[in-house]
Length: 260
Ligand code: PGA
Image 1: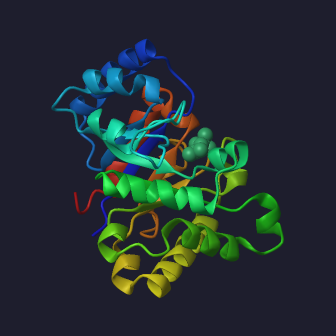
Image 2: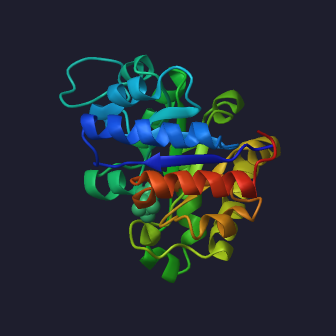
């Protein structure tokens, strides 16, 4: 049984002080109305420590990072490594987000190195994949997803793969207010599972969590989670207000709490 996972990707938003206030409020909301799904917040690196402190030891909300570098330490100005994230209490790390691919030139080889570095240090990577509008329009969505899965995951052992989560995020749906339809999301998730079954194993395809991301809101989360193909959501804009993130967690808990 795949436990539903709701991840808030703050992107480049909130200072460390703003993060403390936000988390105090969010934590109180979640403790008052416990979520029956897994909840993760992924603040910027600069706010990880203040979020960790504000969450305290007993919060059900887990900590994630938005990126990492593949080396453990050394002369890599500006980079942050897996051991550094682990030491700050991170459990998850987002890898290969479309903004990193398009704005910072990340692709195959670098993404796979990051996945491996995360896994080597006990962090659970969330691999983001997704097609552009042009790729969808010219009918190559399945090829793009297949290629991105191969680039990110080829050669990983079954044990390593079992710690990986996939986030299907169509590029055209991110930050646009134009979510994929449930049918589009479900079709993409089925493609991803088919690729995992063929390249890893049917058991891995069955156990891997696949999140949907791209303009998820308190209004559309229920219909997305109504399909058992969708194991949660990676949320950008709607995770920046306590009210909308907490509402998404509540709706997700009500829709799909089995297995928690
Ligand atoms: P969005 O972002 O929810 O603002 O569309 C999603 C993401 O980039 O993960």
